[in-house]
Amino acid sequence: MHAKSDTELLREYGEHGAESAFTEIVKRHTNLVYSSALRQVNSPDTAADVAQTVFVSLAQGACSLWPRLQQDASLAGWLCRSARNVSLNLRRNEFRRRSREKLAMEQLNPIFGTNPDWDQLSPVLDEIMSELPEPDYDALVMRFFKDQDLVSVGRALGVSDDAAQKRVSRALDKLRDLLSQRGITATAAALAVLLSANAVQAAPIGLAATISSAATLAGTTVAATATALKAIAMTTLQKTLIVTIIVAGIATPLVIQHRAQVKLREENQSLRQQVDQLASLGAENERLSKLLAEARQSKPPASQPTRELLRLRGEVGRLRQQNQDLAKLVTDRQQTLAPLLPSSAWADAGSATPEAAAGTFAWAVKEGNKDRLAEVLMLKADQTNANVAVDVISKMFQPLISEIEASRLVFTENTTPDEVTLWFQNQFNDGHTLFSPLTLKHVGDQWKVKFFEADSVAE
Image (tube, rainbow, N blue to C red):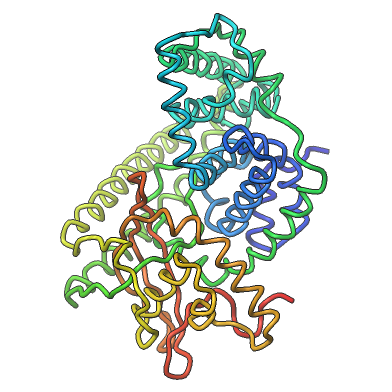
């Protein structure tokens, strides 16, 4: 019986909440994620925390991620990239300092021969691999980190066995060239042997079970924002995945003219329709491509299906171009918004308005003020459960919020009369930007951040 692909398992979890499916994903990739983190943080305990954070992120983003993947796609590359991002957030300053010192020493006294050992390659491997294109990155991870044969690699990448072999070879050559720029010289064959033998190490016993439990608990927060995440799909179609952890950060409200808000919402609705149409045509294109491949092995019954396939492919190309133009339009509109607000200006702004409550939430998480955080969250009356929820949210978001350099409110969605979703643009210290939603509910005379329903916090 053919084992289910990562995409199929993620779909079962995202659509039906099948915990067994998510547990299977964790079992498959725990060693891979743990090893990727261990190479970067150089601490078993910290690597275990990084692995747990990566799978929590996967659980939260399951609903928005699986529709973007091919049927037989593997999550290995995504998980490795996420492990690297989380590791950088935890150890950014120390890692950069060590890298600069090591690079300076290598330039002064190059010690690497044609066959570097693992201790020399490990500290810089993930940083250098991050410079590869994503298809090459995924090919190396599946071939050498996951030890998959070329048939499996080709199926996951959607290419033939020969194409998969060529991609792996080209990726090795690119990796060798990048290493040579750092003073590390090695043959492609030596790199292949070194990666296969050392890239993945066994995670601590019981880590997979711990991650599955934590990710399942965190996954309960996804339902409130799954619909909203689809609204920004058009801004991330060029990426393999969306970073789906919800990051809130704003101290004071951004005043946008009513006319600009209405126009932005109309454009947003148009973008949603374009994305839905593109996804539908993409599925049809994949089906017709398979039919064409089968037809090439025999004589085609008629020219009409081929002409129809070509017509649909042309339509898909046209819609993709339109989507790129629409994404550029969203980028151009950001120039009319107010400047980003520095995170140093965040403060306790109270909770009389949604914007003020969002600002207080970001400030409380950043400062580690759990008492104030508890006041702006929707929590169950039970004190024990409330403390658990506050601890989970504080630990989950504090490392990421601390990396935000500046934020601004982009637009507001009124879900119901007493519920609103605020969309923020967050700029991080390393220069990358993330759009994130924060849902708030009017409770009494205050606005509170809605991560959990008041009666559904886990025991």
